[in-house]
Length: 230
Image (cartoon, rainbow, N blue to C red; front, side, top):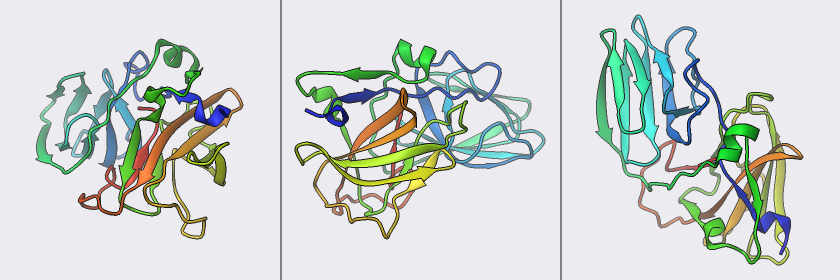
C-alpha cells in the first residue's frame, strides 16, 4: 500500500474574521460576494463563528455543504453558527433549494493546531474511501485558503485502481482552487481518483473522487467541484 492510498486528510483552517479560528468544520462555500473590502472571496470556506460585514449594500451567496440550500444575503452583518445564521444591522436573506449531494464533514483537533491532520492506516480504511462524484470530466478542486501561502500549492491526481497508485497529473495553483486542465490526461468515468493538495512536505489535504456522467445534477459550483478539507 502506498502513502497516497493511506492518507486521510482533514480540513485546513482559514480564519476570516477575528472571531474565526476555533471552528471544527467548514459550513459553506462562498459562491459570490459583492462588497468593497470583503473579508471573503469566491471559493472561500466559511466557518461557525465567522462574522461578515456586508454594509452598506453588499451581497453574499453561500452554498451549504451539509444541506441542499443556497442562501443569498443582502446588506447588514451576518454571523455564522453551527445551525443558524444571525443577521443584524438591517440585513436580509433569501434561501433557495439546490440539487446536491451532501457531504459528511470532519476536522480533527490536530487540524486546528497544525493546519492539517495526516493519518496513515493499515489496512486501507473504509473511512479513507468515501468519495465525491461529479458529472464533468474537468472538475474544479477547491480547498481551504492556507494562511501561510494564501492557497498556493501543488496539486496531484492519482488513479487508485492501479497498484501502486498511479500519478495521472500534477500542477501548481496560485489560489485555493484549480480546474482540471482540458489538455491533461483524460479521467476515466467510474474509477476512483485521489486529489492531493500539498502546501509543503508536511501539510496537505486530500479527497477521493470519481467521474459519473450519468449524474442528474445541474451545473453549479458544488455539483461540478471536488471540495477538499471536509
